[in-house]
Length: 421
Image (cartoon, rainbow, N blue to C red; front, side):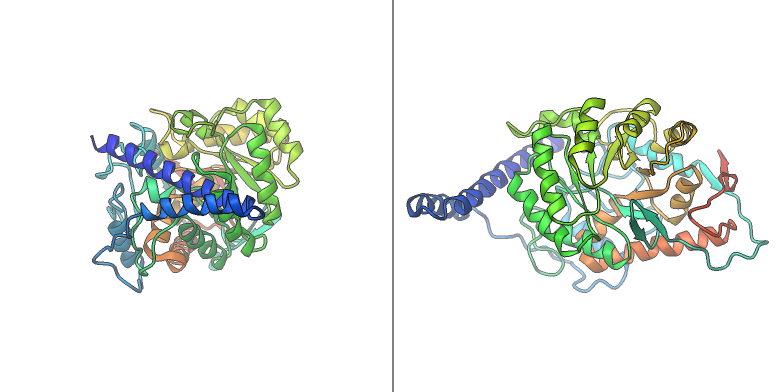
């Protein structure tokens, strides 16, 4: 019943959102026609009259000073995530009360849990007889310099996925997708990293355009994702992303199976080698394929000319019983490198602290994406919350490097790992 209610609420929210966006679009297009403008204004007024006043939330920490405060705020605004702190602020292992709620924070059977357990099954060999005291954490990804090899996860739909719709956030303002995106993007930029603006399956083009205005503000220090829509819809969004000045973009091809949840006319689909090449050839900036879980598909992406790939099972939320991303990463890295491709390989799914970041680098990744912890940080603390989360990851990463004798994140020896201990 809980899942049915969540899905019903989400469909209702998307439908209203599409109506409002369409209304706004019609207002802009018909500005030259007083008749059409009057008709659009009438529709907009009718839609606005049906809107409920935002819900106040009690118990917020108005000016969060720590991640504990941020986590408290996140708990207050979300319906589908308990913001578990089982092993520290923001730790999430897939075994909390969220269960298997999709949409929401849960996963599909074991897929999400495996992501976490794969990291936990890997141990770091502690070495302290060396000269490493100030390791280098800077990397360059597709021409962009990062203070650490961490990007935010590609997350959106917070208002309908997380139950934050029409609620006041910790700062007393209404939580919106744009507000969430600003927390992610500005917080990441302030930390010297990159944050993603997300594309939702049911989002009209006008909604996507509004999110790109946030990307545009950060002049090459913000990036964007596009759902695996039809080719023409993708090309339309690529134009918007490029105009916003994003240095690269991603398509989460692992969303292809969610077509049943799309609104009519908003098709998502798998992409074959031909379509991947079409996207690469159309775009003037690098294209990253997210959701690659097999060697053959990684090689197809390399052949197509993708700028990079992200090994991902969509946070364990789209297919029951997939392997963990860390289980398939080493084989993908080996196959791609053995064939002479230098295409960067990133990974997400289950990254919960700086030690996990180092494990991913030792397994061949050039960088990681962190989803749930950053998501909660933006909801519970906005820009400052995301900055706090990045700072925590950086502190943990540096500590892990010093305690394993790793001097540079660009040169991590796999020998620092011990499996199954």
